[in-house]
Length: 202
Length: 210
Image (cartoon, rainbow over all chains, first blue to last red; front, side, top):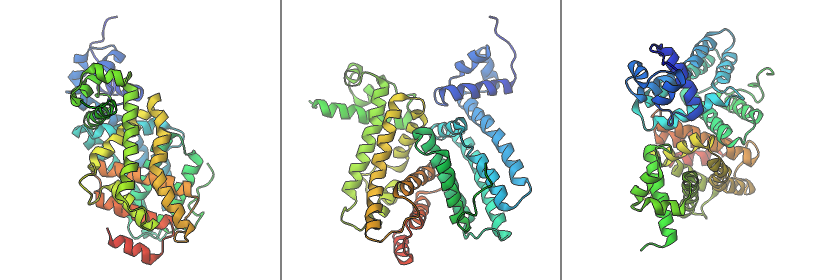
């Protein structure tokens, strides 16, 4: 089969996301992506200097779409609590392991690759900052009572991250239990009476 | 000449080091053999498949953590103190030089999580490893409840699972550079006190040890 001689950057990224989902970040090589597209390695390298750059941008590409939804959600109308839940639901979509697998993969691979670590950390910070901003909004509007929105955000998101790990790796915690725990954590952190954080039924 | 069991451990230690440095995917049997200073044949003799070898690396590390905690934390100390010490070990705050650095230990677990989903051998180890890690917390919490020191927010297994999840999540944050180990420990202590209904005075004393 004759190889294509042109390919758009975005096509490469899309194919790369696919490869990463199948193999994991650490095991994805440029040749895998090239083969999937039916192009040469050289052509991939034309767009991405190194494997590290390709993988870092692949991660960003995969994670970026969620961030667009995040921006919309955070800006939407409703009480601070309502907006917070929309954002937390985006952060931890139940029943979708593939998003979390990418992050867990990303965290591990980021330890060994500065470029990826910068990308992962920056994306991560954007999520955290959105959530912290909503908490501060709620404190200002009088909905929440919270001395330290930064610490509250750290703990809530750390719980979500850890629960995701448990769910993906161990499959030991049901989505329902998980959600109940996040609700009580949110109540505790934001000074809400028990049961108030409960969202309308899904 | 090292005994069989010692050589096995030597290989597992070398494997652990290679995994920490390069990740599971880049840890080939040949690299491990080289690091251990033995022949590839010997590694293959003890561990027929790479996957099995890797599963044992994680398993051994988990066992060592449990043993280390038992050795470093006074079993006769009150439950709250013990929990505090476990958390301190988890966050590697002001630790004994015999304890491996934060980054090395936790990078191993990140690799484990990242691979466990796809690898059957690793998946088998998951339940055991979580159980081993959780046991000291469960025991101390149960003891504290029995003595009326703790008023937990829920059933012990739930409290422990939440605590372990929080530990994992905060470790990830710390590894990524968004937080330092002291803050990690401080956040864990706050959560612990909330989860266990620790009296204000006791909580204050605990925070002074931070």
